[in-house]
Every structure is written in structure tokens, then in C-alpha cells.
Image 1 (cartoon, each protein chain N blue to C red):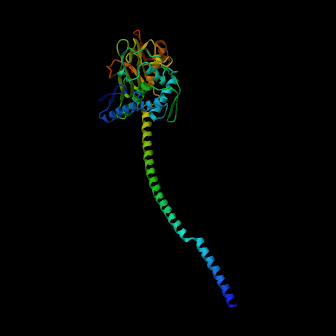
Image 2 (image 1 turned 30 degrees about the vertical axis):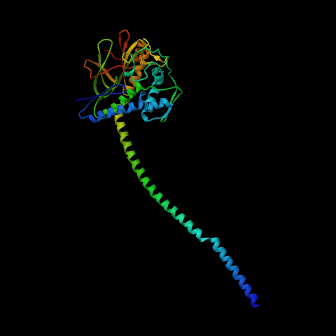
Image 3 (image 1 turned 90 degrees about the vertical axis):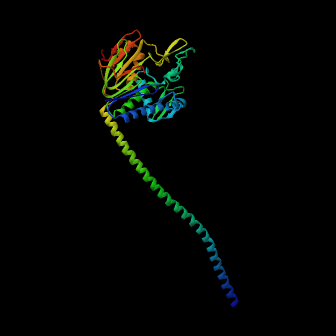
Length: 107
Length: 284
């Protein structure tokens, strides 16, 4: 009887030990450690890229602002030039008796 | 006080006049503009944008070449084909295949076959496309365009005149300009707009005894045959003056005088037989 009960306990203990070992192996904690390293590297890379993107955006914003201010200045110049001498203005010419400052020849 | 600068560019003598003191910076900038545009628009420079377009038949071109080609195509439309930028091959066939100073004036080579003109050219955004066997010459209109651009720059210093080998652009002031006629020279006072002279009295040469010149009639592909020797036109700008002068030259004396009168374009026409005709409201 005692021996039978002992064998039952031993069998139950062996079954518990087996399933515990199975659970440990299935969880493979060594794999988790390796995945964590890669995730950390990716997170670090992401942070670096975010910093670089922020810098690039700042440079682009500065250049865009410079371009817009120059474009506005150039448009003002063009508007002033067109106001001073519109393209459609007919030429102004008359015959005079003055000595010429320059001469037109066949081009 | 008038400051003056002369230099060579685009195969001709360029003269800049500005009525201002201390205009050295503007004069320098205007001269550099000529050299910049020559580097883009010359058909005699292998590395120019125009040469690359003529070689490849298509090009994503810069704004200046697009603008000049656009102006040339508009001029072709406006003049009913008398002005045509596609006369490149006809010019080469006629012997104008190098800078004018390098052409042998009395070459004994056989007369060339007429060159082609009139092919399709399209400009979509910055992309220019030429039909097969179409090449462009922007010599005359390019000089007018450069004169206008240089005048824009010089005008920041004061009233000015730019003379690109006869293609003249004026911004303000009063500028007496000498014009050759069949008899006494004439002086026209110009205060705005442009003026240009086209003719066959200077750029001409011989091939096997036949006299040729650089003004091609796009309809025949050969140097134009007309009773006019020279045409001077005053227009709102140098580009339009250049185009109109060439168009009137090809029209012949009678028709040119009628057209100039009808359009109110001031013009001086000098004929082969030594007559000077004033048209478009101009009177000596």
C-alpha cells in the first residue's frame, strides 16, 4: 500500500516536473533576450532618425523662407519694371537732326 | 553723364549706354548677362543648351531657352511663317555653318542644295521637342532677347540703350540712333521700345560665284530673293523689331510698305535700286 501510494506520488511529481520543464522550454527565455536587443537597436535608430528629420525640416523651412522672401522681392522688381515700361507700350520714335550716339546696322 | 561699354558677344559688337554716374556694377552685370545667354543660345557652341537640343531632338531646357523658343514660335505664327526658327539646316546648307568671321567669302565649292525649314516644335513646360531632322537657329531673335534682358539690368542704374549689333533696346531717356538710308544717314530719336535692322548688305558671301546671304526664306529654304537691301523697324521691344524687320524684308518693298503702314510700324526700307521708303507713319 505504502509502496503503491509512493509510486503514485512519484508519478504525479514526475508529471508536474515534466510539464514545468515543457513550459520553461516553450517560453525559451534565451530567445526573448535576443529579441529585446534588436528592438532596443531599432528604437535607438528610430530616435536618431527622428532627430535627423527634425534637423532636415528646420533647414528646409529656413531655405523655403529665404526662397519666398527672394521670390517676393523679385516679383516686386518685375512689377516695378513693368509699371515703368509696360511691354505693350508702343515705341516712341521721331526723326531728329542730332548727331547719333549709336548706329543700327544689319544684324 | 553717359557711361559706355563695348565688347564682343554673340558674334557681334555689343554697346551699352547708360545715363548715370557710378553704373560700373550695372554695366558689368549687363555684359555678364550677354555672355551667359550666348553660352545658352549659340548654335556654334557644342555645349550650349541650343546645341544639345539640336543634337538630341529633346531637352529639359532652362527658362531662357524655353522663353526664346516660345517667342520664336509665336513669331512664326504671327508672320505666317516668314520668320521661322527652323531654318538652321537651310543656313548650314547655304554655308553659314560657322561664326560669320570664319566663313570664306569667295568659296569655290559647289552651290549647296536648299535646306529644309518648317518642322514641328513643341514646348511643354520646360520640355522642348523637335520633330525628326528639325534644328533651330535663334541667332537674330536671341540677340534681341539678350538686348532686352541686358536693358532690364541696366535700367536699374538709369535710362539706357543696348545695341547688340544693330538690335537695339531702350529704357527711358532720349537716344539718337543713326540709320543708314540709300542717301544721307538718318537719325531717329528713341525713348522707349526697340529697333532692329535686317538686310543682306553685310552678312553675305559667295559660293562658286553665286552670292548668298544669311536671311533664309523658309518657303524655299534658300537665301531670300527680294528687291529690298535693308529694313529698319521700330517696335515695342527689340525682339519684335527683329522679327518684324525680317518679315518685312522677305515681303519685298511694296508689300512691306503696305504692311508697315497698315500695322502702324515705323520702318525704313532701302531698296536694291537705291530708293528709301519711309512707312508706318515715319517721315524724313
